[in-house]
Length: 312
Image (cartoon, rainbow, N blue to C red; front, top):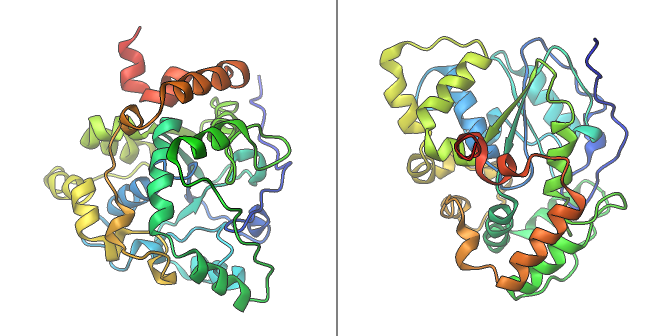
């Protein structure tokens, strides 16, 4: 039986991203496409891939230049595509676009990394405080593009969570405002989990067993690493090492996106939401996920494969 192929059927565009930027991308055999929702281990997976490809703990150039965000509107698309075209090493392409907004390439390997949606929100809350929105808008305006500022959002954490979990940013979504739905993003990939070139990772699994997950990724990518290199590569991929080396590891540093590069790596904890989310909002979250998102295996989405397997 032939496995169905994903169809590029939707256009995702907001202040930051535009999925149409993929239209002129030319794929290469062996390309690695890192696909995640926001704040779900994107930079972590990119870093792991870069460490495996270059086989050294110190990258030859900043990760933001090795693996820029293709969807990001603030970099002129011709300039970004030219940068990818000039790369001679195995390429790592970053995207936050759901699979129904992406082209599908059989020659590429897709790495999807998930995270508990509640932790995604907490991380995005902190992320916004460090982001230089005005500066990013000015970069877009310099290209002659329309830059609609983000809508005003509630200052209160739980009030903003209620908006995020109950309002969609696109007509086909019911949550995720003002960005996009983490649940729908996961479902767009999970529906095609039988594809041989689509592989699933989880933030919690990376936290629990970083070396084991790095070895798994190396196997998926068919990259051989000398045994003596593993300790230094794993150490370079730890949260602490990446935070300490943020000028080289944080995304979009070439654009001046952050007030502090190191603050991009805030805490990197699992289940941060437990001390922040009100009881009312925890119940609202449960209601939304059960009514609208039962298609995705929620044990995995919230806690990863390792913890989910332990429930069996």
